[in-house]
Length: 124
Image (cartoon, rainbow, N blue to C red):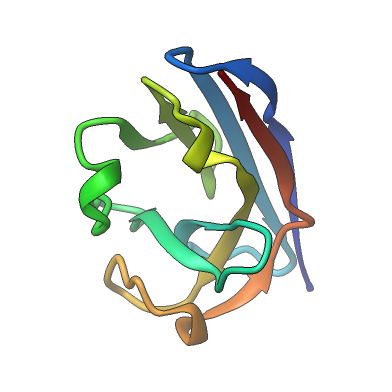
C-alpha cells in the first residue's frame, strides 16, 4: 500500500516563490521515482519534474526551465518542488506521483500512485 502526502501551495503574487513537499509512505518499503505534475483548468495534466532515488531531472516544458527545481527531502521517497518567478499561467493543481520506473520518467502512465493535489494560484 502506498500513500502520498503533499503540503505547500497556496496563493502567491506574480514574481514570488513557493515550495511544495511530498512524501510517499509505502508498506513494504521500496524506493520510487518521484514526479511532479500540474493541471490547469481546462487543460491536460502536464509533467513538471521528476527525480529518481539516486538522481534528478529537469522540467521538460520550456516555460519552466530555470524556474522549477526538484530535490530530494531528508526522508526516503520525499521530494521538494521549488518554484520561482511564478506567473499567473502557473496557476494549477500540482500533483505529486510515485513510479516504480528506474528513470526520471515524464510519462503520466508510468506513475501508479498519486497525491491529492495542491492548489497553486498566482495573482498579478
